[in-house]
Image 1: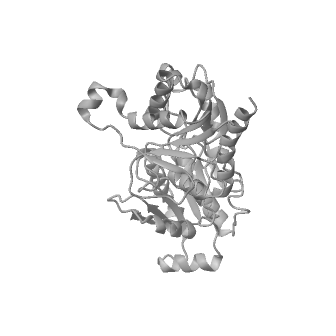
Image 2 (image 1 turned 90 degrees about the vertical axis):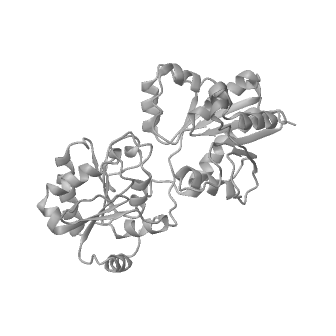
Image 3 (image 1 turned 60 degrees about the vertical axis):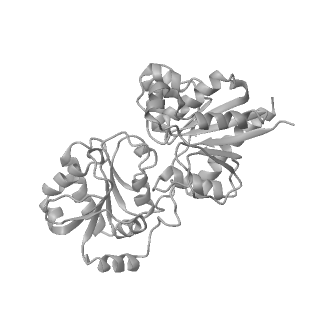
Length: 371
């Protein structure tokens, strides 16, 4: 009887103490009926998870002098544990999550211990690309059998970027918790707007961390350039606290994670001016599911899940006038009573994602049983 172990490895501890989209969906998956994972190797934590999966929580080597003398020892406890599990089974399907250095350490362990015949190695990329030099990219994927991308755009980009791209590929979009991110009744929306003393306002929303690549400056300049927006709408800026005063702009600053949904529910128009190769665009997907009219930069994987029913994609997001024009158009659309049709229907929920994620492991398990 062939014994096949299905294993996930992450640097971070699961449960993860901070907010992390990939950790949240993994926690949901591990507690669900779709969970097929036998072992999970991750960092140390005192927290636990109600799951059938066996957890091994390992320490990283963090001594500076040790890492200076032996730089490849950071994940030695992870690789030692992995070798122990692999040797107890006929074959192992291993998925490393979103960490290049950890993947390199696992790959080197496979080489040194001559384990390749006993292992199928998967890598789950939670961004658009790691933009590695070609020689490092080849080393990174040397023992990789399957690469999981968030979007088709990411696969296309990386296939074109690198001289060779050998692994089998699966595209698995990020999911949204649709029990939380969903449209609310018009009366409930108005009550929420009234609670925040914004009655009668057409509300635009920008929500993110205030980093240059998140595009807030483009949105603020577009707002400055429009008397119409300043006089007829209000822009809520959530996650940024700039020491400036602008007509029609409210800087909310940081809000508690459980309060973020209120701002999506209040907003009529959501702005997503990403200035980098976006892995997926989770906040945009959340806004779409909440029924907001969305204006988004066509950058990275955004176009993979954005439809014409959701609003407007801006092809040249660095040109401020394109934002001004489309924000003014959005104001007219909202005032004419626009309502999203089947908001977020094209976006996976957690259950759909869990089913598809599980199928990747069972696919390899079935292939091995047929050998």
